[in-house]
Amino acid sequence: MMAAARDAARAAARPPLLLGVTALTSLAAEDCRSIGVSLPVEEWTVRLAELALESGMDGIVASARELSSLASRFGRRLQYVVPGIRPPGSAAQDQARVAGPREAIASGADFLVVGRPILRSSDPALTADRIVEEIASALAATGSRWISRNNPAAQA
Image (cartoon, rainbow, N blue to C red; front, side, top):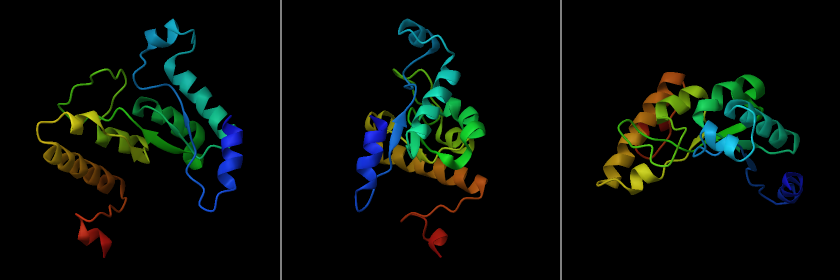
């Protein structure tokens, strides 16, 4: 299935970023065991990432908790999309393996998925601004240039 998606995408004038999904951030170790996965979550995630890479995926969706293992195994051969992002003080809700924006970026995330902490906030705009500030600070700490409409100095 992933190889078929890869072949179809490569035929496009502007190919999309193809992502393989690893262990969902809502799954804890006991959840994995209950669905028949005998490997520890980290090992299972690495195995799923291997399959994605072998199938020609450009990246994977994975928890920040597994990024250090993934980065040491695959380096920059994959892009890392990280869901389950929760800013400090946010509830994990139904997510078992969450991380803050700073932790995810420091671990090697290329893209962050933030939904409920903003959508369920009493002040979504303020919450989003604080998350963007944390992302900018984390990127600055890694030496990355942060470019956004809110940071014109970085655009120079």
